[in-house]
Length: 243
Image: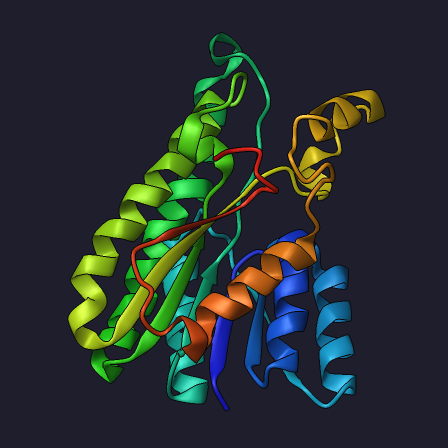
């Protein structure tokens, strides 16, 4: 059985991805930080359906906790076949209203955490000379978002980082790709009013918001052999909002 680590898997895109990969036969490591009850519920749902899910608490802003998680997974299961670096936090504010602490936290979790997680998992995958890494960026990492400048910087960094390690890891039979979701109906957009959501949807060529399943399906496909000749790419799941 292949093993997949999904960071930030207690809700949203991470949750749907965990459920989808479990259906594909993966042993899923459900990483969470604060939402223990939600993460436990996902594991119970997967295990009761005949799949395999394991709970693991680790802060993606804490390098030591990331390293401990990867080491434990390697020790328990022997290999790590897939990493979905999904965990992230949003922050909507004018740049001048970002405190030093807010800037540091956004960068630490959204970018440094991804780099650290990929580094630690990369050590395992390089030794086994196989693996698949999928990072999660954002359409704002591609074009920049007003009032989300620091978030955009972190997500743009993920794109450049993904392309760089795809080149580094390719000779060891490791594929690395990035997904850049558009407007997805998740908690991160809960601060938007219904009228703001409808206005945004009117700008999307497919005239609907994306779902977490739309993104999870793209992740499952990139992780599959059907995408075996694809690496270093950014797949935009945005309904045509950014073309």
